Image 1 (cartoon, rainbow, N blue to C red):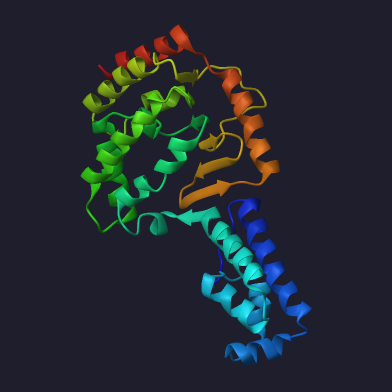
Image 2: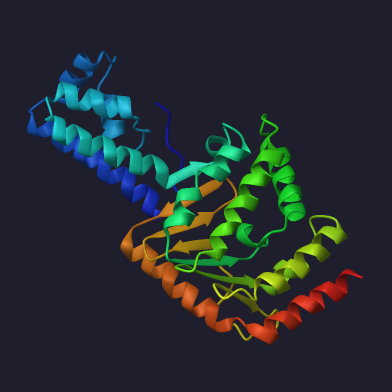
Length: 289
């Protein structure tokens, strides 16, 4: 077991703590001391029990099964705890974990999510959202990601193909896709100028689709008491995905989802849409030349 790093969100830490508390309750209910538990587990001391029950160690499915076996938990309770462990493990995923099997698998892992939602809201401070990217922009972005994260598998082409195919969800008549990003995103140039020019032309085309809404927050917007936040995506009203420097955070706690939803409403109110958004995109196009 590895020592857990400090969580970037109270959601991740709270989820770990809830699971740890349930394992401790299970042991206490059976009247098994930490020393006795360690003996049955084959551990050298009871400190390991304490660390797990305080949420300071990772908890794998094998650890949950071990706890349930020693404490003689019912099959139903065992399955409940295993399901909770799986949820905890998915709360915080590092890029190393996400891309272990290659970039294509990481892209495939979210397909079901996009195909099953009704409302998708995305706020970006860094890059054009993946669902709005051109093939060239995606290729450049994933190539950069592979290099920066040291992904050994070279499956960029397959990952790009998967993302391009996934963009078909924008044609779903039963779903709505709402994007808001800072004007600076239109002007960032991490890739070749021709890649950005084609990307901006694509934005002007895709924002005319009936299921897609694109808003841009002007750089000169009056944003007193409303500074830029981290980039995040909201799936319906149940999940927030936050992209951080070291990995992805999945927020499902209703109170925290509500906080992100409130932030979204404030950011959406700052954005311009329609012809005004298109004029900002065209201005970014002009700056390329």
